[in-house]
Length: 171
Image (cartoon, rainbow, N blue to C red):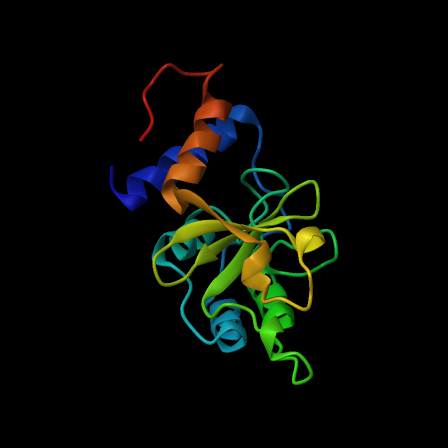
């Protein structure tokens, strides 16, 4: 299944399950993407961008939903994915061990204050557990690999939404 087919399928299942993003969360526009790229210093993964342009700029997905870019959906503190990255990546001259991993973008807040992050280089997912972080150590000490990529993670989530409504296999 192509990325475009996958995104179309997600949109169909969201609609059927009544889980569409809030109407105020629009699709990602060029100015929001430019703002986000400036904040994170790189282009986010292509599938993530296609989701933000094809469905909405966050506001849907597992846990509390995907965080948007630029002016998209936010976490409970009001931060988009790129703003969180900017906050985490702000260097601490007094504690260089605190440096945030290059290319790690928080994309989803979980209920317990943890975040799912995507590695912008290889699209692997990781869980950031700030409550388990000893700030005298690098943040990597509280970042756990999930052995999933974005497509697998969203595919598992959307399969759960689709289960009562359809018996069609998902990717």
